[in-house]
Structure formats: structure tokens, C-alpha cells
Amino acid sequence: MKKTITVTASAVALALALAGCGAGNANQATGAAEPAEGFAADYKGAYPMPSKTKAYNNPQERDNIKDGGTLNLTTTYTPNWNYMSVDGNTGYMSELWSWYMPSLATFDLKGNLEWNKDYITKAEVTNQDPLTVTYTINDKANWNDGTPIDWTAFEATWKINNGKDTNYSPASTEGWENIESVKQGANAKQAVVTFAKPFYPWQSLFTGLYPPQALDYKTYSEGWVDTPHAEWGAGPFTVEKADKDSVTFVRNPKWWGNTAKLDKVVYKYMESTAQVNAFKNSEIDALTFSSNNILQTVKGRKDIQIRLGYSSQVNVLNFNGKAGFLKDQAVRKALAQAFDRDIFEKVHFQGLNWTPDDPGSEVFPVYQEGYENNLPAESKKVDVKGAKATLEKAGYKMGKDGYYEKDGKTLQIRYTYFGDAAMVTNMAKAISQMMKAAGIKIKLDNRDDAKFADTVAKGDFEILPMAWQSPSPYGQLNISQLYGSKSESNYTFVGSEEVDKLAKVPGTIEDQLEAVKAANKAEKAALKLFGTVPLDAPPSFYAVTKGLANWGPSGFQTVVPENVGWQK
Image (spheres, rainbow, N blue to C red):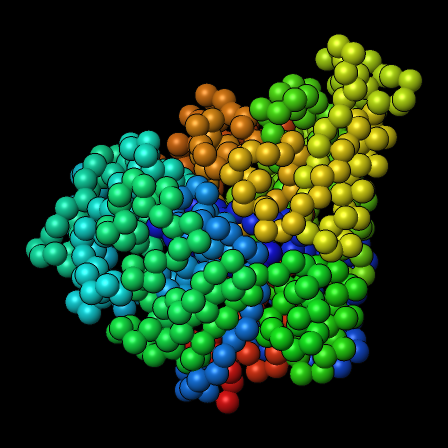
């Protein structure tokens, strides 16, 4: 999982990513407090738990950053560049979009929102009944093709996300479906958004924009495949080159804001092992890692810093409720009962000090105010005997080979995982052994990282380890996206009328903590369907070339692309 700089139509939709970004250990160690720029490669002490209230991204003001230079990075290949579609809604594409597409708002470390004056000079409620919000757009703001960014961009963004037109496939319709109209205000540079039903926080909508030039149905669904459309960009960088091997961003000569500090940003598409070797050989400038072996490997490079912090990601197991034996809720429940989180973490996090609480939510980080463990009792601790009892009650019988069967068929489920890292393979084998103890046979299915997005889009999996990256503290608005029975982002394909109804409540509540409480109630109901299990709350562990500024673990804080660069 790469650094996710989320820029989308709203701060509502969670971004999809591969699981596996994390570190941890059951043994608490102590060491020196982490500096904001991270630890030097030759640091000998134990790495401490980072502070929940600090950023470890070497924060620097623009005056202390060099003008010029190149930043070399890696990411996972995602073919669909339309981040505002369910097929393109990955953390990887979010990061690529952030360099060249409009990002109308920024968040600080705690998730407080501020409008980006390069795009929005004012956003205010101009009527309470009906709720009406008026956005005033920067006069200088234009798309790269010369078209002004005006109220029609707000209208286009609403149209593709409100769910009314089935030719569009948004990652989430939450909030958008509450809007009655988007119209021109005093002039074309003012958008007036009127809600049919109030939606809170309304600020979570329109934090990004979709180009109205691309509303054509075919363009929306097919026209972004391997095509970033630089002409529809509007950011500090623009796309110079993009193919199936790499992407190159350069300064945008049409950008009206602060000039980007970097001259160029280059992403190379690489598998996990190749990324580690590339960093070790100084071919790239940043690497997220998830094992002690990788940490020791990268520390062999002396011109680096190690930055450790909290992330807003949660790794999960998804059970495809449309596939084979997983159509049976009893089987999904048995999988949850047989899952041994302690063993999994020992494999996943061996040798690294990471001791947060186990996650009980897929929409709220464990450190967020209002977080609750929403797991049903059966998912909170391993119970192999209980898993067997669940299966036997549902009519499964133990076969001579040690696996349950029903109607003459062995209870076998496919576990699809990605990449060539040893840790990922070890995690898959650990899952297989856990389930074997409960009489469930696991067939391991390993694929290249580059096939992740396509696998998810086609639903070509039974058990899938993956992750959700939250772009904001408004996780209460993600219940419908993850668990809604009609949501195209519900990759469990499991839902209920009860969950759908409860999921609509948080957006009607203006008070943040009360909205979070309502979301917890909805998620508790959703997790009782056993379509998914949160695995762990991973950290953000980075190795970076020394001096890289404004890049690294920073909670909800938005990375401002034009301020990333090399410290003087």
C-alpha cells in the first residue's frame, strides 16, 4: 500500500487498496522519541510507538525547500484513471490524481477541513431550509484545456455521483443523492447547491471535481483506461507521460497557484520485491514497508530516514457472499470464528514494534474519537470448536480427510492474494492452517499485484485480503459504501434492509460524535452478516531518502503536492 493522498469528488468515499501495509509485535519496546523527520539509518535503539497527535513527514515551510529536483516513487498498476468510478476508486489512483487533478479542500492531522483558496475562495450555507450551500470559485481556476472551472463542474460531479443515472458507477452515492439541484449563482464562477434533504457534514462533498467535458457515457466508462487525460487536469503538476510501466508528472505551466517545488515526479509500477530492491539501490526515494526483514534491508542504505506513524487504513478479509459455499452465512460465520488474530499478527508483524488495539471497525481508525469495537462476539476471539459447531448445525459433516463436506462436496474456499513478498505468502499459509483446524479447506490463489484492481472489479475471488483507506474523519458516511445492499463498493455482496436503513441515519445528524454513534450501530448490524472481518490497524512505516520534506505518516493531513520537495 502506497501513501494515499486522497482527492476525490468528496471526502466520503473510502479508497480501496491491497492489504499488507503494516507492522506490529506483541512485545512493547521503548526507545528515543521519534523526531519529526524520522530516525537516521544508523539508529540503534528500539523504535517507539509514534504519537497519535504528530506527523512524521519532515514538515517544512516552502522557504526551506529547494526549488527543483525529481522525486522517484513506485505504485501498483491500476488501468482505470477515472478515480470517480467504482473501478478506478483505489488508493493508488487517488495518489496519482492528487498531483494533477483539483483538490478543493485540505485536512490537518486531526481531520479539520479547510478550503483550498486556489480553487474555492468561499463556501457557505446561504439558506437553512432547504439547506443551500454556495461555493465561490477562484477566478483564475481553469482546466488545462482552457475551459474555466465553473458551476458546471459542480453539476457534473453531482450527476456522476448521485446514483440516478445507471450509466455512471460511483464508488459512493452518500450525500449526493440528497441534493436537489446544482445551479449557477451570481455568475458562472459561483455554484449553488440545494439539498432536498439535509446532509451532514455537507463539507464532505465537493472536495474534488469531475471535468464536465468528460460526462459522455462512453468516456466515463471506457475513456480513462490507460489514459489520464492531462487536458482535463487542473493542478500544480500535469501528466507528461503515462504507460503501463510508469507515469511522469512535471510542473504545470498553466497552474495559477504556488509553483511546485519539484520539477518532476516519476512513478514506476513494480511488484513488492522489486520495490524493496529499487529503494535499496537508490532508484526510488520512498518505500512503505511491512516487515522487519525489509526494515533491516533498507537500513543498509545510509542516506535514508525511517518514519513511523499511524495510518487511517484498516486491513480486512472480505468473503464473497455470491461465491460457492460463501453464499451460506454459516460458512462465513465459521470463518470468522476460526480466524486467530494473534497468530495472524505474529506472522504479519514479526520483529516490529506495533501495539494498537485490534480493530473493530472498517470505517473508523482505532484512535479516532467515538471509535467502538463493532464486531459481533463470534468475531472477537478465536473459537475453533464454535466454528465446527456452526458448520454442523448448518448440516455439514466431517469427512475422512479432516474437512467438512455437504451434499458430497468438500468445503473448499479459494483465498486470493497478491504479490511476491514472503510475508504475504506466509500470511496466506497461516490463514490456510487456521481454517484447516476448523475443517475448512483453503485453496491458495496467488496473483501479481497488477491484477488486483481487475480481480476486485470482476468479483473473481472468494476470500480476499484487502484494505480500506479513509480520507477523512467522516467515516460515518461510509457505511452505505461498504455495507449497503446495492453499493457497487460492497465487495462482500452481502447486505440487508436493516443495514441499509441504519446506514442512512448518520448523514442526517449534524453533531459529529452523535453521527459516529449512529454509524457504530449500523456497522454492528452489518458485521453480524459475516461478510467481512477487520484484520489489523496497520501503521504507516516509511523509508525515505534523507531530506524529503512533507512526505510521510501524517494521519488525516493532506499532502499538498506543490509543497513536497527536498529540504535545503
